[in-house]
Length: 465
Ligand code: AMP
Ligand code: ZN
View (cartoon, rainbow, N blue to C red):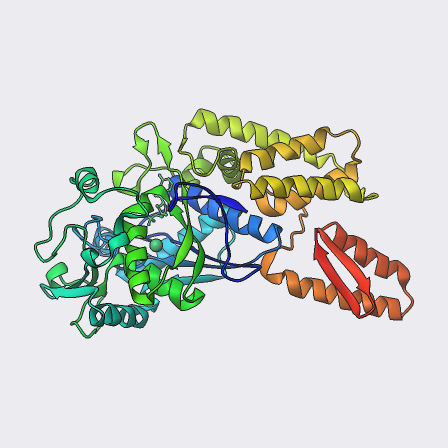
């Protein structure tokens, strides 16, 4: 599997720490407002990436955080906490704000067929983890206390500028407007690990710590949650391109200083969704939500289709005309697929051939536009019967998740192993009862899901096609 790696600025082979297992961390939303469709482009891409890896046969352990504390308005640790700001705006508690917008986020994900990662963890649920990491960073000289706050000392981490590929002078120019100089910092890009009262005005969310009552900085949550749930090594870390600096840069600095070794080799970043004014952003005030698209008569899955039709690393400019075009193409595709036979004889060779082609597109830097094109190739192929077309496209849709069929059956991922073992046992029972017809039906059913049973002397094993 090859992906565009921000760390090296090129498409590279994914090298795993443990064969067959992908440990994947994806930064979650800051739940102070509705997610806009730009944020959701990133989550669609991560969803397709996770499902694609599972399609290739990997076990994916994916973790996502929910930022419900610590994300300040300015990236340079300036401004108010975004959640506290929303609580004031809406006359609610911070907890109510976070809960409400977390639910809204997952409702949007449901509408877009974005599967919830197996582990989703709130920043506020892992305070002990951050305290443990910050304590060690202080002990080892990577952090310092100043003005009541704890800061990471970027001068102690020589690789600090590696991910962004930029020099300190360029960064200073690039982010000048955003960085309000904090007089407590030793170096301009040092960042807050723990804030005490010098940084908030009666902020509701506070915890006791060895450095006083306060709250964690934004970046530490992702290192804390990733290390807690996925261990010392990550295989893939994802986010949108704005996360490269400072968020992911800071995650690397604190994680590697804490762990004492490299942390993650593959950093995958998704291009922005832009509108006519540039990057769509919550802070600009006006942004598009899934509900708004629905109100205007669009199917959320037409938006998913639109996103899949562009390469993940490139920026994508949104307009209603483009969405309208995507909706028309998507509806046409659904109508074509509806005509396919749901029962019939499976042409195994064609089924395997197209699955292989689909895998090639996945492996070649997650080429979702080509993955979509392959559906049209299947539909046009005169040598493939209607039922086989149905089964091939159904299998693709386990990854693309466009709900192309009404009664779609997808088993990928976490439940796959249990599912297969149950089917193997069911088939064994059928054989013992001399019900060979049922046994064959079970074998064929698995085959249509890309699972080939292999009968050997020691029992039945399987291969993922
Ligand atoms: P936030 O909720 O602001 O923390 O953002 C959630 C995710 O959406 C982060 O990974 C951001 O980098 C990403 N994001 C923010 N704006 C955009 C955009 N216009 N297009 C794509 N992704 C975005
Ligand atoms: Zn993060």
